[in-house]
Image (cartoon, rainbow, N blue to C red; front, side, top):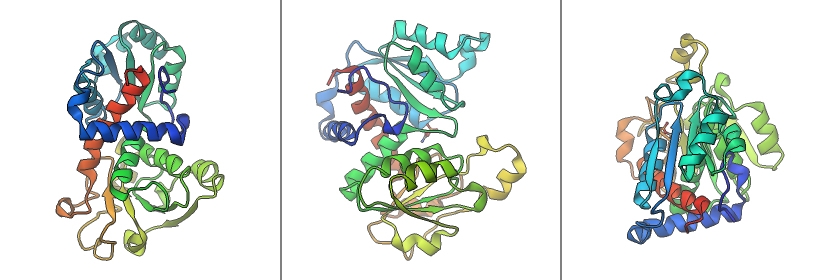
Length: 307
Ligand code: CP
């Protein structure tokens, strides 16, 4: 039963509950008109304390496409946050006005705190370098629709594996499906944190290895998940400038990749995928972004209990 629950961490829902959301998303994609009035009378509050294009717009359009309405802020200084209001008080107030809330915050754990004081479902729309569970739903739905499975996959995750919250969430999620192999491709300075290796990969006996160059492992991959170097999480600009172009995927590097490998990226991209790759049939990142809207429609409908 998903009605009334919050989504803070990708592990909050069972594999079966995720499947329920993906099946509904599949049906929404196939029959969007049937869902146009599903959330009539419902209101989503988007509380974005950090910039966003995809996540905020996809949440908002998801609610509008379900027939509901949206309030919120994309600039916290336009709300009473600027006067020092706490997250606990803000969400208590938002709970009086809206039926569901999506929160993005630079501080790890902020959406979790909000969910503790909220009387409506709270969805973590990304908290600092920690987790981004609805991006993970987007990623899983895209893999499920293209590869027709979420197990027996070799997934290369490339780029900023230290600060990239989408990677942290995806590793968590993929570790629950059978027989997946994860290849972590990053420079030494941007390796995935030890706690994720220990608590997710080792604990769940997930096969994984680390690599420094895409070219060395690309022929093994079913999915290549590119990420940008997270400028906003660096403590000094020098390090960012030195590392920002560690990986640039181009057609030449794709030569030895499988014909049916898919290239994903949570976006935004900076330099890490050349524009020439956009025309490659393996490039799925724009379709992935569209899937994000459909999976958020399914998620919100389930949490509000309207479907
Ligand atoms: N993928 C993602 O979270 O993009 P935005 O930061 O634009 O929301």
